[in-house]
Image 1: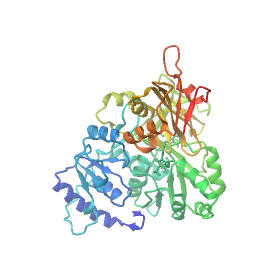
Image 2: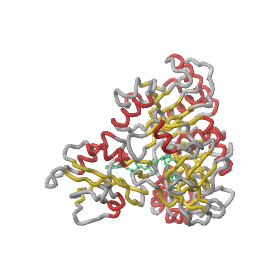
Image 3: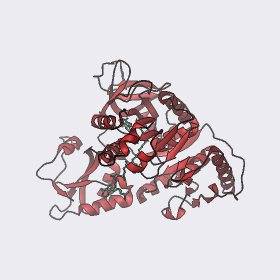
Image 4: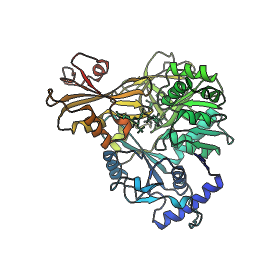
Amino acid sequence: LTVDAATLTTRDLLAAAGRHAAFLAAADIRPGDRVGVWTQPHLHTPVALAANALCGVVSVPLNPRLGAREAAHVAADAAPRLCLAAAPDELPAGPLGPAAPLDHLSDRTCPIAPVPGTSPGPLLILYTSGTTGAPKGAVLSTTAIASNLDALARAWDWRPGDTVLHALPLFHVHGLVLGWFGSLRVGGRLRWQPRFDPAALAAALPGAILFAVPTMFHRLADAAEHDPTIAPALRRARLLISGSAPLGLREHQRIAALAGRGVYERYGLTETLIDCAVPVAGPPQPGRVGPPLPGVELRLCDDERRPLAARDDQTIGEIAVRGPNLFSSYLNNPAATAAVRDADGWFYTGDLATRDAAGSLRIVGRRATDLIKSGGFKIGAGEIEACLADHPEVREVAVVGTPDPDLGERVVAFVVARDPAAPPSAAALCELVAAALAPHKRPRAVHFVAELPRNAMGKLLKAELRARTSADTRTRP
Ligand code: MCA
Ligand code: AMP
């Protein structure tokens, strides 16, 4: 593991896990207990996540920029026994339980205890936004994670000699499960750059497998226009892999032109881990996410959840998956779990796709208009709406995602002010969201409108809002 200038070997990691086992025992934390991990940009963060796993402790990785409302929700829902943090004074006071520093991980004078070992049961609880309500905690087992990583290793010919490079956060599947736990499972190296910077990423790229979200490929391509080091670095990478959101055809072409090689896409969700991947044994397939991974059953379904047999690359259906890769449940939320998983074990993703004769999928959209993917982060419109509706001068609000060349989608709020002649400032509304939720959930634009479009039944017409740039719309900076 390399983070910035520091490198730890497997032996170093195992020693750190031994010290962690002693630390947990002293804090009376036992296998199966839940522990928050404030995923700060620090070497101790991935080490703590691996050490928790080796000690059979369930990690609840948390965005270190979590807003107050989200922190209070996670604290109440997951009830972590304590919250581990490399820099505990940065933890918000209160909700997340006692903050515990991680100095013991690198302090060789600390006591060592036997490492209990990973349990096959719950390993992680990852919070993911839904269409409505607060984020839900997806419980992921060691068995699900291990089986998925083994399937991915085959699809990507991922080997012990490989180095993965990424600049992703460690509180989501992409950076944590694939990047970090994947490297551990394969027995390879991870080079983690906690802050994304195109030039720094490019400098570490030769020989490495890059895991990145489409926004990062977009910014790499932009940076290559004025930085002559980036294209040669892209050419010398071992493999370029994109996921978490669609990589547009234009971006595929820009990278291919710069790198002289294509990007392989894969597709998944927090709840299912990775379902499909373009195998590296063949050429990249711009616009496609590949066939299901070995062991993953996949169907396209109609609106009544009946399977569609078509492999014509035209018939559109909702992707449903079944297999050992699936999450166990949403924490404390059997109703939400039952809404997405049927009695036969099929999980309904909400994503819409076509399938070609070879079984490779092309994702064409998603069912819910209330989910936004921005920079690879899933954002529930309802969460932002609930926050803005708290403002005393707001009568009604609707939040949508609109296309953005850099972020994929941008968060845009439509607001009906209580007094249309004196609406609140857009800045005040953004600040309200910034205080309550993580920064990527702030609206990029606020439009003040006289009323929200609804159909005869009173249902809000979000598609109309997305299309709208109408005359009664006043935009504030
Ligand atoms: C943002 N900013 C704002 C506003 N919005 N400031 C004022 N008003 C606003 N409305 C601030 C941000 O806080 C930030 O400030 C700065 O503007 C730039 O923000 P942004 O453009 O969002 O870029 P960024 O902060 O540089 O982030 C881009 C990123 C990031 C690095 C690509 O989005 C990222 O890490 N994405 C990865 C997401 C991910 O890992 N997803 C995996 C989910 P400041 O500079 O102060 O911070 S797992 C998953 O999806 C499945 C399983 C899968 O398939 O992988
Ligand atoms: P999350 O809940 O953050 O794990 O996000 C999962 C969602 O990301 C999926 O339901 C898809 O909508 C989207 N997604 C992930 N990978 C891809 C991809 N390669 N192409 C298109 N959408 C993707």
